[in-house]
Length: 119
Length: 149
Image (cartoon, rainbow over all chains, first blue to last red; front, side, top):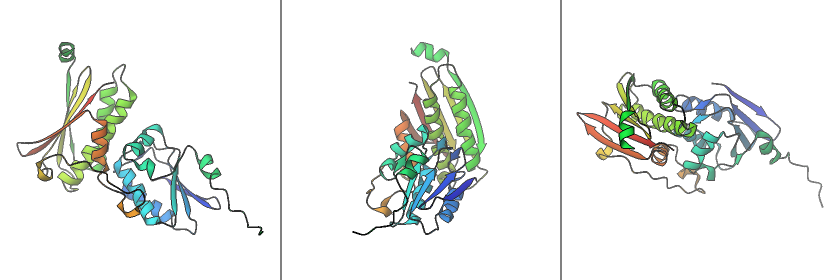
């Protein structure tokens, strides 16, 4: 499975380089993504722009990764293709995850923290 | 309309041995075959592939308890205004002998209540126009029908 991890400074971007995330890949995905999520960062962005097919196993695996991350961390997604967005909508997971149009938009919403200058 | 429909009825049968990979491939193949005809809507192909993937994965996982190498048959009926697929397996019957209730009660604020399983039936019920289940000659027969847009 092609899964690339990149630390941008305050966000860890996990890019899934597969055309699908279904029952054939969901276990491996959960394992690899969970390992990739073991860092000091609190915000994780899953880039699924290459995924044109996702079923409930794929959604379940993403929910599983989020549970492992716990309450103190965030898992957001970007680059959902229309078919994947539809599955998120039908399962109401679009209410749970913050979904960004693109990686650029997602990263822009999490600017690196500015050092406090005091008052 | 029914008269025309009957004239253009095409019936195909596929058989696979249970595995997640074979299930995924069969779902993709049937959706391609059904929507290869001129005028077919790509969205119908997506819906069909998704629901077949969900249903076939359930057969491998639940009816056969994850066992590989067990028979699964798919009877595909392509009509002018609908696709109908009957999936037949020799595994365990559905609990209570009926289709599972669809419930996705979760509290968006309650982390642990979020479902990791059971969303497949929600997708099937949302995307198919008719879903039926029966036990026939010690087999499970699941019928999925999609009317064409």
